[in-house]
Amino acid sequence: MKYSEDQLKNWCLPPSASEQEKAENAINMIKSAIHSDPTLKLWDIEIFVQGSYANNTNVKSSSDVDVCIMLKSVFATEYPPGLGRSDYGFVEGTITYAEYKNAVLKALIAKFGQENIRIGNKSIKIKSNTYHVEADAVVALMLKNYALINSRNPDRYVEGIRLFSSSGEAVSNYPKDHISNGHSKNNATNYAYKKLVRIFKHIRNDMVSDGVINGDVITSFLAECLIWNVPNDVITKYTTWTGRLKGAIAYLHTAIQDGKHTEWGEVSKRLYLFKDRKWTDVDAKSFLLKMWEYVG
Image 1 (tube, rainbow, N blue to C red):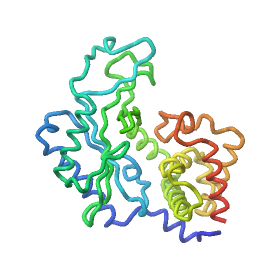
Image 2: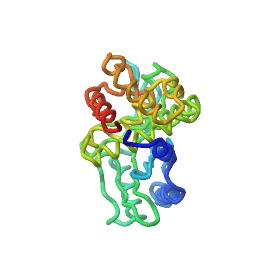
Image 3: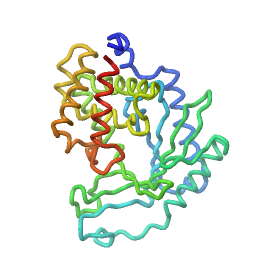
Image 4: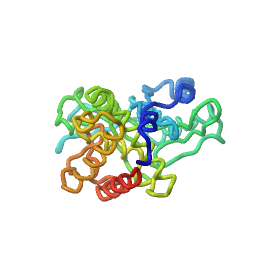
Protein backbone atom coordinates (compact mmCIF):
# COMPACT_ATOMS: atom_id res chain seq x y z
CA MET A 1 0.00 0.00 0.00
CA LYS A 2 1.44 3.35 -1.07
CA TYR A 3 -0.09 5.19 1.88
CA SER A 4 -0.01 4.09 5.51
CA GLU A 5 -3.09 4.09 7.72
CA ASP A 6 -1.55 6.97 9.68
CA GLN A 7 -1.13 8.97 6.47
CA LEU A 8 -4.77 8.44 5.56
CA LYS A 9 -5.85 9.43 9.07
CA ASN A 10 -3.84 12.62 8.75
CA TRP A 11 -5.54 13.42 5.46
CA CYS A 12 -8.94 13.17 7.15
CA LEU A 13 -8.21 16.45 8.86
CA PRO A 14 -9.19 19.83 7.38
CA PRO A 15 -6.52 22.48 6.64
CA SER A 16 -4.75 24.11 9.57
CA ALA A 17 -6.20 26.91 11.64
CA SER A 18 -3.90 29.40 9.92
CA GLU A 19 -5.13 28.31 6.48
CA GLN A 20 -8.73 28.56 7.67
CA GLU A 21 -8.04 32.06 8.97
CA LYS A 22 -6.63 33.11 5.59
CA ALA A 23 -9.74 31.72 3.91
CA GLU A 24 -11.99 33.71 6.24
CA ASN A 25 -9.95 36.83 5.50
CA ALA A 26 -10.60 36.40 1.77
CA ILE A 27 -14.33 35.90 2.37
CA ASN A 28 -14.60 38.98 4.58
CA MET A 29 -12.68 41.15 2.11
CA ILE A 30 -15.03 40.16 -0.71
CA LYS A 31 -18.07 40.92 1.45
CA SER A 32 -16.58 44.29 2.38
CA ALA A 33 -15.94 45.12 -1.30
CA ILE A 34 -19.56 44.43 -2.25
CA HIS A 35 -21.19 46.04 0.78
CA SER A 36 -19.17 49.25 0.46
CA ASP A 37 -19.78 49.78 -3.26
CA PRO A 38 -22.27 52.65 -3.81
CA THR A 39 -24.03 50.89 -6.70
CA LEU A 40 -24.12 47.35 -5.36
CA LYS A 41 -25.36 48.37 -1.91
CA LEU A 42 -28.63 49.49 -3.54
CA TRP A 43 -29.34 46.01 -4.94
CA ASP A 44 -30.56 42.91 -3.10
CA ILE A 45 -27.44 40.72 -3.02
CA GLU A 46 -26.74 37.60 -0.97
CA ILE A 47 -23.13 36.56 -0.43
CA PHE A 48 -22.38 33.02 0.66
CA VAL A 49 -19.54 30.54 0.53
CA GLN A 50 -19.88 27.49 -1.70
CA GLY A 51 -17.57 24.75 -2.96
CA SER A 52 -15.19 22.61 -0.92
CA TYR A 53 -14.62 25.21 1.80
CA ALA A 54 -18.34 25.55 2.50
CA ASN A 55 -18.74 21.78 2.31
CA ASN A 56 -15.79 21.22 4.67
CA THR A 57 -14.11 18.93 2.15
CA ASN A 58 -11.22 21.24 1.31
CA VAL A 59 -7.63 20.08 1.58
CA LYS A 60 -4.49 22.09 2.24
CA SER A 61 -3.06 21.82 -1.27
CA SER A 62 -6.20 23.42 -2.72
CA SER A 63 -7.46 25.64 0.07
CA ASP A 64 -8.87 28.41 -2.10
CA VAL A 65 -12.43 29.58 -1.48
CA ASP A 66 -15.45 30.00 -3.74
CA VAL A 67 -17.63 32.95 -2.78
CA CYS A 68 -20.97 33.33 -4.54
CA ILE A 69 -22.19 36.89 -5.03
CA MET A 70 -25.83 36.25 -5.89
CA LEU A 71 -28.14 38.98 -7.19
CA LYS A 72 -31.74 38.60 -6.01
CA SER A 73 -33.15 41.91 -7.30
CA VAL A 74 -33.21 40.25 -10.72
CA PHE A 75 -33.38 36.48 -11.00
CA ALA A 76 -33.30 33.70 -13.56
CA THR A 77 -36.13 31.21 -13.95
CA GLU A 78 -36.92 27.73 -15.23
CA TYR A 79 -40.60 27.06 -15.90
CA PRO A 80 -42.59 23.87 -16.51
CA PRO A 81 -43.39 23.20 -20.19
CA GLY A 82 -45.96 25.59 -21.61
CA LEU A 83 -45.61 28.18 -18.85
CA GLY A 84 -43.78 31.48 -18.83
CA ARG A 85 -43.08 34.71 -16.98
CA SER A 86 -46.62 36.09 -17.19
CA ASP A 87 -48.09 32.96 -15.59
CA TYR A 88 -46.19 33.81 -12.40
CA GLY A 89 -46.78 37.55 -12.43
CA PHE A 90 -43.16 38.41 -13.23
CA VAL A 91 -41.87 41.22 -15.46
CA GLU A 92 -38.57 41.52 -17.28
CA GLY A 93 -35.66 42.58 -15.09
CA THR A 94 -33.98 45.95 -15.47
CA ILE A 95 -30.42 44.81 -14.71
CA THR A 96 -28.56 42.61 -17.18
CA TYR A 97 -26.09 39.95 -16.07
CA ALA A 98 -23.29 41.77 -17.89
CA GLU A 99 -24.07 45.01 -16.04
CA TYR A 100 -24.12 43.20 -12.73
CA LYS A 101 -20.86 41.35 -13.36
CA ASN A 102 -19.13 44.57 -14.42
CA ALA A 103 -20.29 46.31 -11.23
CA VAL A 104 -18.94 43.44 -9.11
CA LEU A 105 -15.66 43.43 -11.04
CA LYS A 106 -15.25 47.16 -10.46
CA ALA A 107 -15.85 46.73 -6.71
CA LEU A 108 -13.35 43.86 -6.43
CA ILE A 109 -10.67 45.80 -8.34
CA ALA A 110 -11.18 48.74 -5.97
CA LYS A 111 -10.66 46.41 -2.99
CA PHE A 112 -7.90 44.07 -4.18
CA GLY A 113 -6.16 46.06 -6.94
CA GLN A 114 -6.23 45.50 -10.70
CA GLU A 115 -3.01 43.48 -10.60
CA ASN A 116 -4.61 40.89 -8.30
CA ILE A 117 -7.75 40.31 -10.36
CA ARG A 118 -8.18 38.04 -13.36
CA ILE A 119 -11.40 37.16 -15.18
CA GLY A 120 -11.76 33.40 -15.50
CA ASN A 121 -14.31 31.50 -17.55
CA LYS A 122 -16.82 31.09 -14.71
CA SER A 123 -15.51 33.33 -11.94
CA ILE A 124 -13.41 36.35 -11.09
CA LYS A 125 -10.06 35.10 -9.79
CA ILE A 126 -8.45 36.89 -6.86
CA LYS A 127 -4.75 36.20 -6.22
CA SER A 128 -3.58 35.05 -2.81
CA ASN A 129 -1.10 36.83 -0.56
CA THR A 130 0.23 36.38 2.97
CA TYR A 131 -3.09 37.60 4.41
CA HIS A 132 -5.66 35.66 2.39
CA VAL A 133 -5.94 32.58 0.19
CA GLU A 134 -6.79 32.62 -3.50
CA ALA A 135 -10.49 33.17 -4.09
CA ASP A 136 -12.99 32.61 -6.86
CA ALA A 137 -15.75 35.23 -6.83
CA VAL A 138 -18.72 33.60 -8.54
CA VAL A 139 -21.01 36.29 -9.93
CA ALA A 140 -24.49 34.81 -10.29
CA LEU A 141 -28.19 35.51 -10.50
CA MET A 142 -30.56 33.75 -8.15
CA LEU A 143 -32.26 30.89 -10.02
CA LYS A 144 -35.87 30.05 -9.26
CA ASN A 145 -36.50 26.64 -10.78
CA TYR A 146 -40.20 25.86 -10.94
CA ALA A 147 -39.79 23.08 -13.49
CA LEU A 148 -38.00 20.66 -11.16
CA ILE A 149 -41.04 20.42 -8.88
CA ASN A 150 -43.66 21.38 -11.49
CA SER A 151 -44.71 24.35 -9.39
CA ARG A 152 -47.21 26.99 -10.50
CA ASN A 153 -46.82 28.92 -7.24
CA PRO A 154 -44.45 31.93 -7.58
CA ASP A 155 -43.27 31.38 -4.00
CA ARG A 156 -42.57 27.64 -4.38
CA TYR A 157 -39.39 26.83 -6.30
CA VAL A 158 -36.01 25.15 -6.05
CA GLU A 159 -33.32 27.74 -5.40
CA GLY A 160 -30.13 27.64 -7.41
CA ILE A 161 -27.75 30.02 -9.14
CA ARG A 162 -27.34 30.95 -12.81
CA LEU A 163 -24.23 32.47 -14.31
CA PHE A 164 -22.90 32.99 -17.80
CA SER A 165 -19.35 31.94 -18.59
CA SER A 166 -16.94 34.09 -20.57
CA SER A 167 -17.55 31.72 -23.48
CA GLY A 168 -21.28 32.49 -23.33
CA GLU A 169 -22.49 29.26 -21.72
CA ALA A 170 -25.38 29.44 -19.25
CA VAL A 171 -24.39 27.50 -16.11
CA SER A 172 -26.85 26.48 -13.40
CA ASN A 173 -25.91 24.98 -10.03
CA TYR A 174 -27.51 24.30 -6.68
CA PRO A 175 -24.79 24.99 -4.09
CA LYS A 176 -27.06 25.25 -1.05
CA ASP A 177 -28.54 21.81 -1.74
CA HIS A 178 -25.00 20.48 -2.14
CA ILE A 179 -24.07 21.77 1.31
CA SER A 180 -27.23 20.43 2.95
CA ASN A 181 -26.99 16.96 1.38
CA GLY A 182 -23.30 16.62 2.21
CA HIS A 183 -24.04 17.47 5.83
CA SER A 184 -26.78 14.83 5.99
CA LYS A 185 -24.59 12.10 4.47
CA ASN A 186 -21.76 12.98 6.82
CA ASN A 187 -24.06 12.53 9.82
CA ALA A 188 -25.43 9.27 8.42
CA THR A 189 -21.91 7.81 8.06
CA ASN A 190 -20.68 8.71 11.54
CA TYR A 191 -18.75 11.65 10.06
CA ALA A 192 -16.75 9.40 7.73
CA TYR A 193 -18.08 10.75 4.41
CA LYS A 194 -16.26 14.09 4.37
CA LYS A 195 -13.08 12.54 5.72
CA LEU A 196 -13.12 9.97 2.92
CA VAL A 197 -13.70 12.77 0.40
CA ARG A 198 -10.56 14.53 1.69
CA ILE A 199 -8.55 11.31 1.34
CA PHE A 200 -9.83 10.88 -2.21
CA LYS A 201 -8.91 14.47 -3.05
CA HIS A 202 -5.39 14.13 -1.62
CA ILE A 203 -4.72 11.01 -3.69
CA ARG A 204 -6.26 12.62 -6.76
CA ASN A 205 -3.91 15.62 -6.28
CA ASP A 206 -0.89 13.31 -5.98
CA MET A 207 -1.94 11.50 -9.17
CA VAL A 208 -2.21 14.83 -11.00
CA SER A 209 1.23 15.91 -9.73
CA ASP A 210 2.75 12.60 -10.87
CA GLY A 211 1.15 12.91 -14.30
CA VAL A 212 -1.00 9.81 -13.83
CA ILE A 213 -4.27 11.63 -14.58
CA ASN A 214 -5.37 14.90 -16.17
CA GLY A 215 -6.57 17.24 -13.43
CA ASP A 216 -8.72 19.22 -15.87
CA VAL A 217 -10.72 16.05 -16.58
CA ILE A 218 -10.65 14.38 -13.17
CA THR A 219 -11.60 17.39 -11.08
CA SER A 220 -11.78 17.68 -7.31
CA PHE A 221 -15.53 18.16 -7.70
CA LEU A 222 -15.85 14.85 -9.56
CA ALA A 223 -13.93 13.08 -6.78
CA GLU A 224 -16.37 14.44 -4.20
CA CYS A 225 -19.40 13.43 -6.26
CA LEU A 226 -18.06 9.90 -6.72
CA ILE A 227 -17.78 9.39 -2.97
CA TRP A 228 -21.27 10.88 -2.59
CA ASN A 229 -22.56 7.96 -4.68
CA VAL A 230 -20.95 5.32 -2.47
CA PRO A 231 -23.72 3.82 -0.27
CA ASN A 232 -23.49 4.69 3.40
CA ASP A 233 -23.17 1.06 4.47
CA VAL A 234 -20.14 0.60 2.21
CA ILE A 235 -18.45 3.53 3.97
CA THR A 236 -19.39 2.47 7.51
CA LYS A 237 -18.71 -1.27 7.35
CA TYR A 238 -14.93 -0.85 7.48
CA THR A 239 -12.95 -0.09 10.64
CA THR A 240 -9.90 1.41 8.91
CA TRP A 241 -9.41 4.19 6.38
CA THR A 242 -7.44 1.77 4.21
CA GLY A 243 -10.52 -0.46 4.15
CA ARG A 244 -12.89 2.42 3.44
CA LEU A 245 -10.69 3.73 0.64
CA LYS A 246 -10.32 0.38 -1.11
CA GLY A 247 -13.97 -0.48 -0.51
CA ALA A 248 -15.08 2.80 -2.09
CA ILE A 249 -12.84 2.40 -5.14
CA ALA A 250 -13.97 -1.19 -5.66
CA TYR A 251 -17.65 -0.32 -5.28
CA LEU A 252 -17.50 2.62 -7.70
CA HIS A 253 -15.52 0.79 -10.38
CA THR A 254 -17.77 -2.29 -10.23
CA ALA A 255 -20.95 -0.20 -10.29
CA ILE A 256 -19.83 1.69 -13.41
CA GLN A 257 -18.68 -1.53 -15.08
CA ASP A 258 -22.09 -3.12 -14.36
CA GLY A 259 -24.02 -0.09 -15.60
CA LYS A 260 -25.47 0.79 -12.19
CA HIS A 261 -24.28 4.38 -12.37
CA THR A 262 -26.59 5.91 -14.97
CA GLU A 263 -28.82 7.63 -12.40
CA TRP A 264 -25.99 8.88 -10.21
CA GLY A 265 -26.29 12.54 -9.37
CA GLU A 266 -24.12 15.35 -8.13
CA VAL A 267 -24.21 16.00 -4.39
CA SER A 268 -26.98 18.56 -4.89
CA LYS A 269 -29.20 15.77 -6.31
CA ARG A 270 -30.42 18.32 -8.86
CA LEU A 271 -28.10 17.37 -11.73
CA TYR A 272 -26.98 14.02 -13.13
CA LEU A 273 -23.29 13.29 -12.72
CA PHE A 274 -22.56 11.89 -16.18
CA LYS A 275 -25.41 12.97 -18.46
CA ASP A 276 -24.33 15.90 -20.65
CA ARG A 277 -21.52 16.85 -18.29
CA LYS A 278 -17.83 17.67 -18.80
CA TRP A 279 -16.73 14.26 -17.49
CA THR A 280 -17.89 10.81 -18.52
CA ASP A 281 -18.32 7.41 -16.92
CA VAL A 282 -15.43 6.24 -19.09
CA ASP A 283 -13.19 8.93 -17.56
CA ALA A 284 -14.33 8.00 -14.05
CA LYS A 285 -13.84 4.27 -14.56
CA SER A 286 -10.33 4.84 -15.91
CA PHE A 287 -9.53 7.13 -12.97
CA LEU A 288 -10.72 4.55 -10.43
CA LEU A 289 -8.66 1.78 -12.01
CA LYS A 290 -5.59 4.00 -12.06
CA MET A 291 -6.21 4.99 -8.43
CA TRP A 292 -6.46 1.31 -7.40
CA GLU A 293 -3.12 0.60 -9.07
CA TYR A 294 -1.59 3.84 -7.76
CA VAL A 295 -2.34 3.19 -4.08
CA GLY A 296 -1.22 -0.44 -4.40
